[in-house]
Length: 357
Image 1 (cartoon, rainbow, N blue to C red):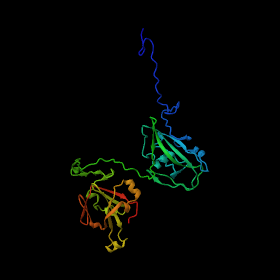
Image 2 (cartoon, rainbow, N blue to C red):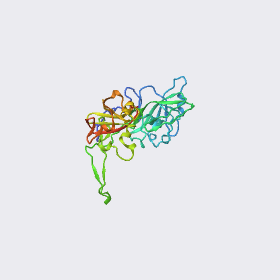
Image 3 (cartoon, one colour):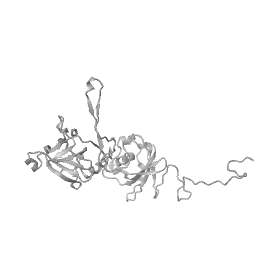
Image 4 (cartoon, rainbow, N blue to C red):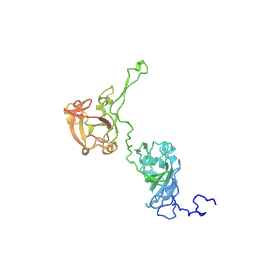
């Protein structure tokens, strides 16, 4: 008698029972659909985001006595791009708390949950979910610029309700979830996009007789002490040259602060007193005075902007004060101040965010 594979004497063995991969662990009989992520905690009412349509149903969960119910909103992946027409039109009013008709995708970009520059959503993203908290209408909504997008201002009461974003996460196509963190400071993170080099290269172009003697000098970018891209130090970066005085380094220091790095330390050169504003400056002939300090620790650009540029006294120690521009001697390998040489390898200008003292 012919036997099928697995049969012994015409008797089939008992079938092994395979565990269900989609069963919820610890919950007998609970089955999770593919691509659906269950967050711990009580179930929230759910709304579906549709491009071009405001969340009018949000007002039904708002309560004037303060017992408003949070709402979970699902956003399809194809809506999470800069091509969203409400994102391009900046259809959002407020900051942290937004009007009811503010576009949710634009709000998530403004809060820093999602990148404003994405033209196509990542392939592994199925949707984004956000938990919104309905709030009472405000008398006015301020305008702020964050994360490459500026919200609009509204100075009159509105009907319905306002809302804020409590949390946000990504649901991948495999069914896992990844929590997203906001960036309420609005400062983009520095991305190292340059390849470091130990030496400068000279390119000679020989396209025609007129271009044979033409040389183009490449800009060498290195990584600083906190792994952010900074230009390499050279005399051309700080020398006063050209016919436009506002482009000279001495003029740039009226609105920027110059940071310099050696292989182990970071220094700060800032304008301490403009010409004629200080009594000591007038006594010295009305010249500008500069302060050269050593930074106590290297900080990322976002942290420096938050603390204030120039840095506060707690973050630096003054090495030379009351410097005139003629006392700052720039050299090929560093800067000399009153006979003391500081070797330098990197240089960076940062806009002032705090008043100089």
